[in-house]
Length: 491
Image 1 (cartoon, rainbow, N blue to C red):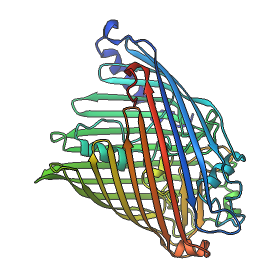
Image 2 (image 1 turned 60 degrees about the horizontal axis):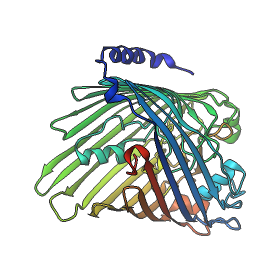
Image 3 (image 1 turned 180 degrees about the horizontal axis):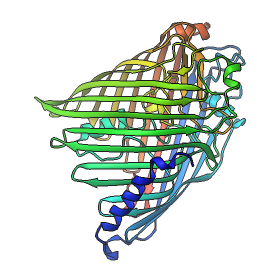
Image 4 (image 1 turned 90 degrees about the vertical axis):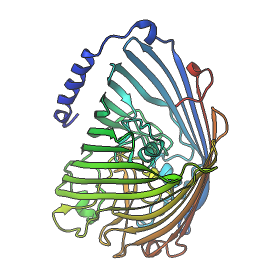
């Protein structure tokens, strides 16, 4: 694994802190085996931007079963988890022969990634051993990791902002995909007096759209974060740094250079990302105001090119908390840099690394690269078990000389992991409206509904002149069970 020197001092620090933690009694920490089951079935319907004669209207079914076994022994715990993803009736004609039109929705991506209309596999999703000190934890093996989610805020507003508007922007399991993503390596956490230090060094595994998640990729990442919760739980801030390396030198990188130039670039990608975020929730009258800032700078090398990029998000809202329901109105702005010159020596497109892009692009036809997003959203919970949400987005490309990017990072040794369509000297991408309803039917069963409509603008119309509009929706069934909780829904 490359660049491990970045993380080694912090690993030794955590090990030392763990040895100083007082021992715990076996009677309070030993446990029998626990078994967990997670089953997700999703029925998808796509009406992609028209690209005749290829199919842009189609449906398919995703199924993901995860079965885990775990145990706690004194100050240690371990977990083994198997995943069995499958996709049924994937369209074989949802990939256009016109390069700019590409894959016509995620159905085309699943087929292209597996060359199979009904791909399925089984693999080790997680398998780790963890040491649990009083204030410290060290984990080694295969696991899932989510940047920005190192703490569990006591304030529910900050907790929602952390989970839905900060976490997984850069490193995550790509949870919306069917095979998802795991990491092979180690991570460590230390908590004391409101402070949290988290570190991780790992190599990414295959998966996401490729149903076989067993192999490792020649892609590794290191991460370090310092998080502080203060002001009576009304404020949370984090400073973080991440190092990314992609050694898959046989693949053409996705950027705005000519294909011949990209194909001849066999140098590694090495990028450092340095950032901070601030979350605040302040009581005001019958509710509370919330504020969010997230920002990051990047440097390094993009193959033969130097790399310099940046991104920032500013958001705010107000939620009623003393009403019969809890309506929450929010708005925000996000901007990431794009590359204005495909022939110079510097790559300026913000690189999202290994995220879960769908959290920030619920209709998955864009991501946070070369992107400017202005949005408003309205959320409410008319009853405890039902969460409603509606969003409006106005999307533009930051640079008209760069690409319209899609994807969520490396998932296969045969493809780069991001795709790009030409901007054709335009920046107006689309207007997007979507609605969702998440219903927790019982402790074990959830039903989720989603529908979105995108009206393509200049960038889309230049590539899909027949029909620049798109629709997507799904119905999702989720079942969770954990034997140690006597049938209650697991996490």
